Length: 159
Image (cartoon, rainbow, N blue to C red; front, side):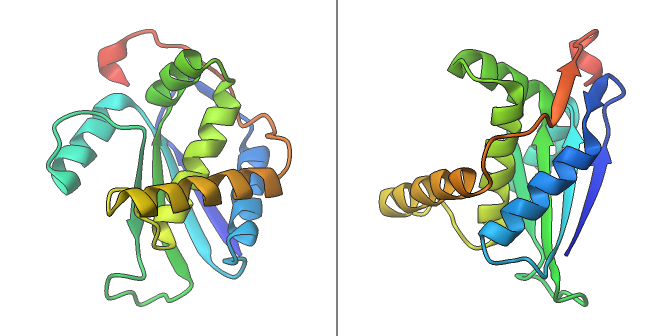
């Protein structure tokens, strides 16, 4: 199993080893321990561009997942890419009264489940099924480690 991490934010302090271990634990919990995963941490501006380009929604979002198994994939072990907007994750964590680490872990699980074929937008039944699976995976990976230590929003337009 391999996890590739790319961080496109200069003002993000992260615990890279913890983030990689968490991603590996998630892959193991969903039965994809032999798969490869790419994780990218970006800002709201870039996330808005991606959301507009791939989903035709001109706004930022918290997480996007790009499955590779649905495409003509020359590498069958590559599960896909999960892209997380760190500024949105921090806002959502604040609003929900939980830590940014818990929010990033939840978004990573959510993205990986999308790569595995779950789609909460398909129906309310599928959304409930996905929420149950998210809770089970988060429980399986145990206490959330420190994934991101801080994010300083100096200039919101540059994220």
